[in-house]
Length: 530
Image (cartoon, rainbow, N blue to C red; front, top):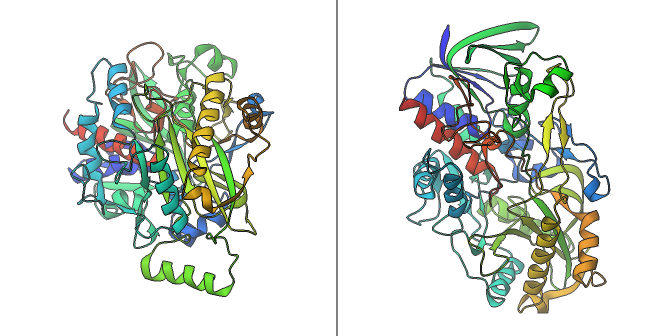
């Protein structure tokens, strides 16, 4: 069978794209590297603390010399639903200014203005927020924290007293201000892109989903993709389509382009791959969100289990009766802060958790080495939204099964260090403002000895982490530093598109799940108009 579309990757963008295409009767072959998402470790929010790397590609980056040579995991979902199955479920669209900026970078082409993408977000959502900027009939359920801990209330109040504005919906008219968190959940369970947009269509005759697939390359000649070659079990297969869309993510989409001969010709020649098209921007412009952590010991109980059986019982009852509390999500409040009054959009995303832990929880991805603090505590993450540092993804060999080489130095640009220093300072000011000031016992990290911009900058070199938000490696644009055009078609290839975080031309003020679903849905609608 010759399919109307072959979609490589059934993650956040891929599921939304498949929904748009199959709903209009187009035949789609979806190729997913991972397997089933039928696991309580995915569905039950609190189980993410114990998930490990079972549903992950297991990628590790090269040593980051800007942070003392640290070697980190780069988590990317390898399961139906992609990274929406292993993330923190935080739902953030992005600032309207982000999309207006993307539109400017594309000279107004492609309809990327906030006014153009907002209706797409609305069509995806079924939100509990009654704002006129929100959707209420889409497949993706989004819920707001309604019964936050008293410490989360105090953080919001202190942020307002310190000069921030209360914003009842950071996914509405403006992102700026302090708010209560929003999550992609339904009835207290994780609600993934697959739940929302793929599973309702699986029984349709015009959709075939193959899982545990290794896509090896695209056969390209005369500016067209002629076929997609992949391994499924022990079989080597080849499928044909009028249109091929890569939704494999910021690491695997450029990897597949390079395996197919699209990339920097010098790099491809070096590892024995025949060059189809010299596109040096493939794999470049790798972006991430670096973040700093602040930990505080509190004078009143937090969600840390310091109060015995009755506290544990209350937490369990809160989840069973209300589907809220730490068993549903650890973060309860968010602030989107500007570095200065001259900033046109928020520079930081701040996440507040009325619970403290040691170990690693990278924004949205877990390393499985977590231990709750033995005292009442809170943890605050300060993410730098618009990073200046960048890296790249390249191939280690021509073997499709080989891990790519991920090179990223998070603090290679001094402006990112200075920005994080400013962000931590702003959060410290919030924590030193009543009512939070009266609830804090002591700042545990960075700690009172880290009391100057110079000492904080030095501290951050050893303690900054990454939020598991890779993007930018198949950048959208018009010039030679881009891979796809504003219509998301790969430059020089007539029937190949990309829809995932790799197309983002610069860093967005958001976790990536929501904007990726928008990108997939937007491309689907665009293709149907052809």
